Length: 111
Image (tube, rainbow, N blue to C red; front, side, top):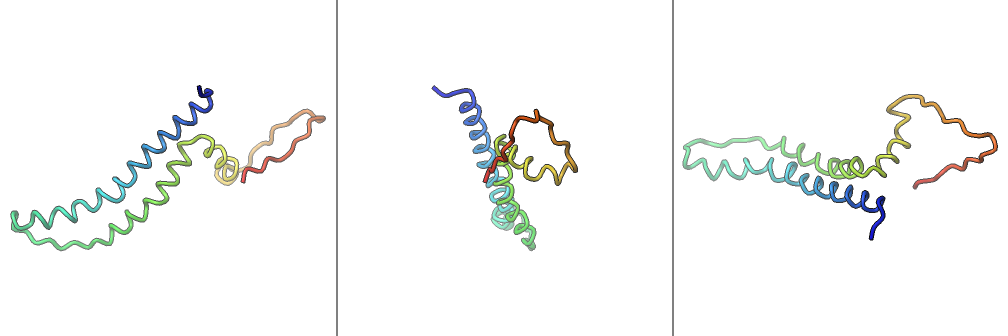
């Protein structure tokens, strides 16, 4: 039996896995499909095919960042770490929470 947190985390991992499995289809399979299919159909349509496939390299190059960012944005624990590390850059100056003077605060090293 899993705790609520473990169940919630496993649900996030499953969603991230689904999104990561859609990524190769969007960035690798769909862009190349017309390049492979049109020359096969050109004898039947009587058209000449002359494409510049340079744009394909740009789309394929988007796949690795998409794959990593999708996982980091879907799993909330990673999102918290990203906000802690890069949140001050994106949101500007932030106000530090105040605590009781007798409480000692130790910095938490994540990585």
